[in-house]
Amino acid sequence: MTGNTIDSGELSRLSRKGRRSILASAALALLLSTSTAALAQDANFDPDASVVIGSLYEPQNLDNTAGAGQGINEAFNGNVYEALFTLTDAGDVAPGLVAEQTVSEDGLTYTFKLRPNVTFHSGDPLTAQDVKHSIERVVAPDSKSSRKKSLATISEIQTPDDQTVVVKLSARSISLPYNLSYVWIVNDAAKDLNAGEDGTGPYRLDEWRRGSSLALTRNDKYWGTAPTNGEVVFQYFTDATALNNALLTGAVDVITSVQSPDSIAQFKDNPDFTVTAGQSTTKELLAFNDRVEPFNNVKVRKAIARAIDDKKLLESIWGEYGTLIGSFVPPTDPWYVDLTAVDAYDVESAKALLKEAGFADGFSFKLDTPNYDPHPIVAQFLQSELAKVGIKVEINVITANEWYTKVYKAHDFQATLQEHVNHRDIVFYGNPDFYWGYNNPEVVDLIKASEAAANTDEQTAKLTEANRIIAEDAASNWLYLYPQIVVSSSAVTGYPLNGLNSQFFAYNIKKSGN
Image (cartoon, rainbow, N blue to C red):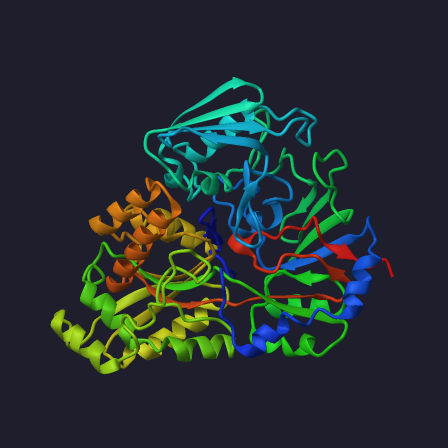
């Protein structure tokens, strides 16, 4: 949430980003916009180039177990820190720091052999004890990682030797490798990870100028393939227009995620720039506090969903881009089904449901709204839509930090807007203690049983059913799925396109030497 996101693996400004954005044909055409000139530049790249990445998501701190927001995922995940497994830009789980993996027949014991000769930036060798320490940081009582509950089945971690980690589970967890891709492996001797780092990645932290930039320099002792550039600088902006202007003037080389369709036109037909459309996992939500009246009434929640013209909202924010999905699950998740017909826009039906719920004359509620785009605009749209069915919305604009403290931690809210960036994050609806307080025992059981599944087909079937129930319960109102549009100077290539979980791998970026 990260002021940053909820990170399935991190809470974020809960992202403005985001598996498959089903974009309009015009958006798909953008994917073909990489020019032959750009390919030629790729062949003549400068291996020591400094690549400047423009972003709206500065970290709150540098520790992803401390509520650092989506910005730290963007800058550090896979760049500075690595995990036992890696979530690739295509959404696959690949070995990271793991060289070999074996699983016991009952699925309760995972044995991992670490890659040899891996060192931290400080020079210390990677050992099994570092892995044990890193996992324990995530599941610790004071951890703010949203992946903590996903790792709750870990009952014991053994380190029989420096290169072997044995993870014992209290129950089967088919998603363990996936969940471990969110666990950064840190040196167990590292201090003050809020402001520093000691990872194993292809870059080390050079300098963090709070409010301005974060510079990463190439790790020349990296165990894997060396980066195709010498330095990466994340330059931070608080305004999307200023970010776009920085790209136009050459102050930055690439924008991690365009925030307005209106800004695309200035780049799309200009040979100096490349525009690409990727796949998003970022969902814009109207999240209710399902614990409190009147949102503890499913008929009220369903009425609100039917009173909002999501298509009109999406078009007003993103024009021809973005996707309506009708649930929390994007098309890139294996358990996606199109649920847009559930509680589809129908004002008269919304009024009838409100009457059945005892609110024929409507009611009033406060909508806590993050102060960054597009939330304030979305809040005004919802205010207008809900007024048609007699619901009065008081818009309360708050900062990302206030959102984290008030909404996410204290659950002191009636309803809120937020963007959730993560991949495969339906599991949050199986946690009654999560900030929105949704608690359907059948869903809790399905999600729990899906983790204990013997195979992926069984897991997918259970989560598909859970998704349908969550949608029928209108647990939240899923307004739309963001598009994922990356714009760069035509002098750079090799950057990731999909931005899953806000990560932005920089090590393959090539910048022309011309």
